[in-house]
Amino acid sequence: MNSTSHFVPDRLQSPLARRLKSWETLLLGVAVAIFIANSFASPYFLNAWNLSDATFNFTEKAMIAFAMALLIISGEIDLSVASIIALASTAMGAAVQLGVGTPGLVAIGLGVGLAAGAFNGFLVTRLGLPSIVVTIGTMSLFRGIAFIVLGDQAYRGYPESFAYFGQGYVWWVLSFELVLFAVLAVIYGIVLHKTNFGRAIYAIGNNPTGAVFSGIRVQRVKFTLFLLTGLMSGIAAICLTSRLGSTRPSIAVGWELEVVTMVVLGGVSILGGSGSIPGVVIAAFVMGLVTFGLGLLNVPGIVMSIFIGAMLIAVIALPRLWTMWRRH
Image (cartoon, rainbow, N blue to C red; front, side, top):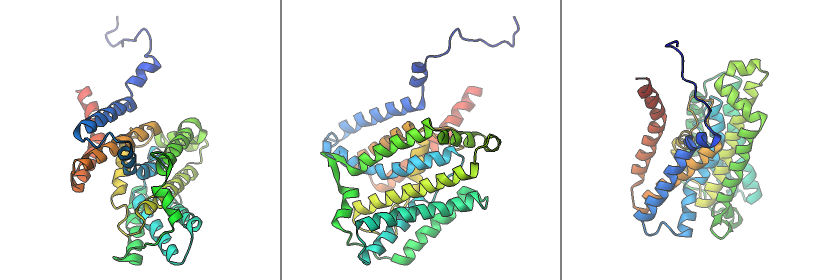
């Protein structure tokens, strides 16, 4: 027998076995463990209304994370999402001062988000600029506009009907935000995993040159993904502004880090080409449970920020360390 021959198993692993070894299954186990730990750590955790409040820790960020996941899978990134929220919220607050009602505010929030996403997409797909450089620049640009308009002031006086998006409940403890999160998760899951558009995203992330020769309109797909990321930032701006009832230029500061952490924790490769929406959904619950549990224990916000940063480094570094360990 040739010493260089390889062992071939008698049969391949079953789909169930592969599923049990998947990142999503591991992450689900982590979520269950955190849930159990929180229930022992605080007597106030296992309360239906408290658990409902816990969803506000991640639903708005997760809405952006769905679009961000598609963008990162395609090999791009948008670090300006939190600043788009600030810009959209500032535009809505300015409109309130002019007497614009709830339908107009929603239209403005979505419109500003789309416009900001289109601006990012134009710079990346038409001018060929690196997305990380472009969105770092627009992160400062959009947030700077909000600070110039507002200074140290705040916009208030939003209509009562506008409060429903961030404070309303569809049924019992099911908030409007949680229902919207679930609907968007299904939509993005279908788009990524069941459509030609989703397959094109994977193809672009794995081999953009090959995707071009396969007939995929690479730049058009990427531009659409930047539009979606801007749109989801606009939706998050509507929900967050509605929940807070006011607009400040510091709104959503640091959210870009949490959104990227959520996406990468969900199993999306930061290098592009792989990832899933179910993983992002589970990661959203993991981060929500962690931050809510720490909040119940009165852990300071700066400690939570340190934890999120450490989590981002860990989920990026661990796969590479595991590969290096296996090689040696």
